Image 1 (tube, rainbow, N blue to C red):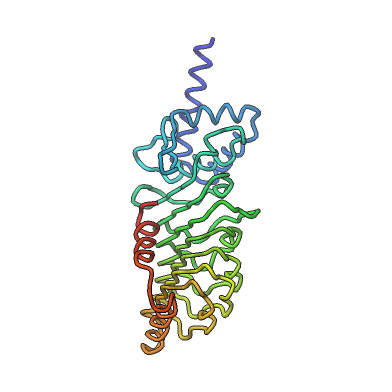
Image 2: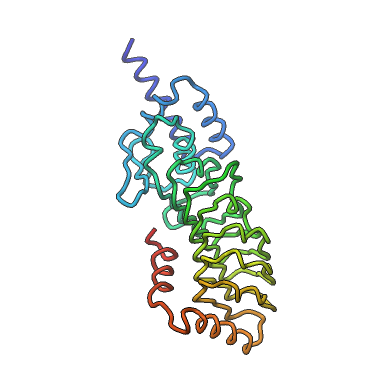
Length: 285
């Protein structure tokens, strides 16, 4: 009898894994919700995540139920949805500090897990070249996340969810389809690096004076026709990039040179710009 029960349980687990890897996101959401409603959900999580570990850099290393040589995007979705919904007593959810989704490692249609920001220690989210067009809503302020890298996606509207991350320090939205920036952007007062290169932004807000921690602002390869004078109020700004816009060359040169000159009386701090570009925007996170 025990052997039959064990066999049926094993068959059920196999069917769940197959659905997570090959089913529609509607089917996956329904299954995750059904599992979450069960009284033994923590026990199920223990079984699903058996063998999974945390790398030294804070990433979850899939194994067992979630091991997948094909790189199924939907299986990754299910993994993080289950982990984010797991009980607070499930220790693995407290150990993940970084999450990364990159097209070269995943196959199939991608959807960002809506509960991802519920991971209590998540500090960095990287989603590159995944055809992402929006972020899921964040229902409460998240003070843990400091790095968001959404390079090379299809985001057309600046995600309001980012405004719920008050300690955000590095934001990379380069090579998307963003047309405008919200005036509420100034709420991100701890932002040090803002990369908006390669969008279709035609104008930027007037109010920048509250973003006194901003050091690097990349607005190159957009459609700017005007630069607001309020950028002069950014006391920490040392690197402003405006090339390949609809600005006269003289205006572009004026801003870039004057920002560099005003920062520490004309002495730039070597290494910060290249460090941020290489470490945070080129794959080491």
